[in-house]
Length: 406
Image 1 (cartoon, one colour):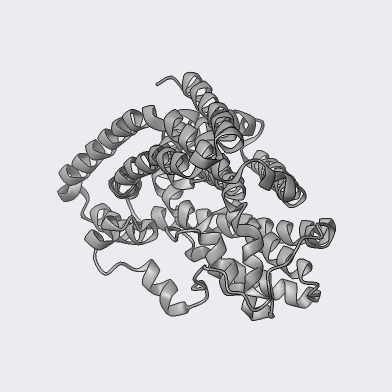
Image 2 (cartoon, rainbow, N blue to C red; image 1 turned 90 degrees about the vertical axis):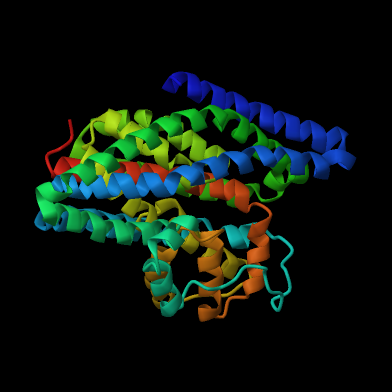
């Protein structure tokens, strides 16, 4: 489907989804629950189709990308450049969230009713366990990792597999050709799956608005508005830094990834945008082998929007309960989140899980998460879109550093 046409259809689906959900919530509240359950089937089916693509696409493109680099020295060099950018962008995201939440102070300004400090949110706080992090990173088997769509584990296996294939040279050439064909087939499958994107967007927004109405936006409008302002500042800063490397083409890059960006925003899923992002980055001029290597790693280590949310939301909850954290404690929180956020990939409601794990370390009531649960979907839309922008920029920057940006 043509990019411009898809953008229009997604916007149409988004608009009709909100309007339909509002009509059901306002005039047919007795049917809202049943309608939402039915409408939710559309994004559920779409996300299942996307997940069907992710594992074979990530594995095949990453292995081919590594093998095409030719030697482990090149793999190591590109990997170090990518990780260097990821860490730099992560520090910016976390620090900006910390600075802006201290300047804007949404937790103090909102004057909302607080959950009891002894209340526990139904979010498992599993983000700080080193054992869990290692178990989440290294696969027991590639079949298990693919079955559960564990991107980070697939990346680890693909790194070893691709490095071994590169070392074998011509002996592995036929295998690499097969995987290259698989990658192109999966990208073609992606074009078919994307035909369902407008319907998925319609269903996701219609279900959410039908159940919660637009009132939740009014009640939490200050917090949501300030968080989206923070995301806008982050976008501006990242794009400005990216322009230092790739020049004025950074705006062309932003236009090029508008479809996956809009898809991630509408479905509140960075994963849903992965196949389309890869395709658009290659159209923009990024090297196939760089994009295939950097993008899947970025989905594990470079979730800029999610990381900013972690500091912003954690300190928002502290402010709401009147808990003062010294600058030293806030810097310690930033350091903890810098480490724990790297295990986010593949974890449902990952940002909330990491926040739930962090709050007790600073004696902040975990029940404060209940302040966010009702609006988390709307916040996740912005986080997911930001993750797409951050990873697209990372691929373009590394491609330029390697002299492979057309």
